[in-house]
Length: 128
Image 1 (cartoon, rainbow, N blue to C red):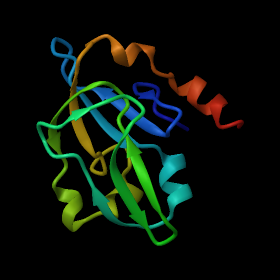
Image 2: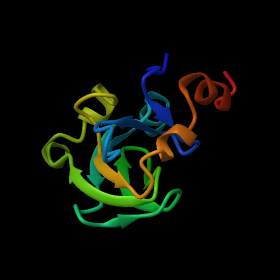
Image 3: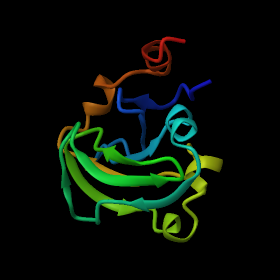
Image 4: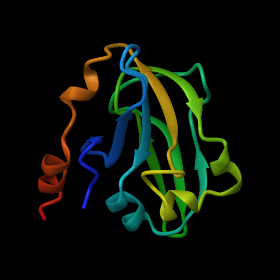
């Protein structure tokens, strides 16, 4: 159910390594998270250049049900944000692993994604 080529956090974010040398990663929320939130109507992301810390809130997702924090999966600096979400936040629901990605981070430690959960461990963390 969860893409095997991604790493996951217990806060329901996914991480895709975009560049091996620098370790730059793309971040989004999982299918489980978007389903639990319901229809996303607004997304607040950390601006490019922002330093983020693993496990700390760095943005917000507003849905028809609630407002939820978006957490940084790794320590690092935000390099890019998905500005398309400003006008089309529903992409988080319709394509959470593709066009609904949130931001990219250059991690302090390029090996850090390897310490996150793999798809099977994430699935197990959900109790399913």
